[in-house]
Image (cartoon, rainbow, N blue to C red; front, side):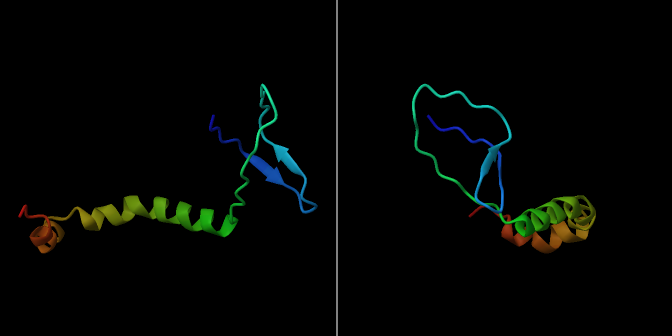
Length: 72
């Protein structure tokens, strides 16, 4: 069984699950610590995509990159 559960890790190492989980038996787990800076960068990239798409979707841009889209 693979299941992901969001958690907060306190400075002292205490893990606080953000939702209850029910297990039939004791299980192993892998804990991945997320770097908050990476999340901010990813959100910025997602938010800028709509603005950048205005430039990307111009006919002159499509023409400039069309040689990369040809089927060989």
